[in-house]
Length: 157
Image (cartoon, rainbow, N blue to C red):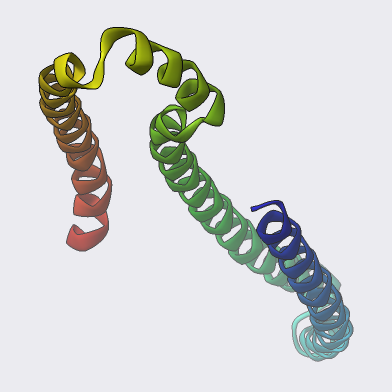
């Protein structure tokens, strides 16, 4: 299990570094392109309409670019938050079943089984199993409407 966590961390870190490097390169190329386009637009508008209009045109171009970048950023941030919430829910479900396979719990149960006796313990274990199954299905049913509500707005859009 620890090896899987380490492998996941390595994979996510490597992917993050690669994506960040690529994003930096693309960002720099877009910046240079935008600079030349703004210079060309500024010169063309200045020759045709004047200096004030040229400055306003370049300001409008930068405003449009910043609004697009802000929209993309907020969308990505919202998606990352939704992924984190889904991962937390999945981790909580996994943690809920972890006590049942705990070696310390099993080690503590063996002396109890020996003291009470297996023939007397079988009916109690059957009742406990039914109760545990009922609780697990109830917890699973309570978690499903949350996911359905989260997916419903995405389907409508």
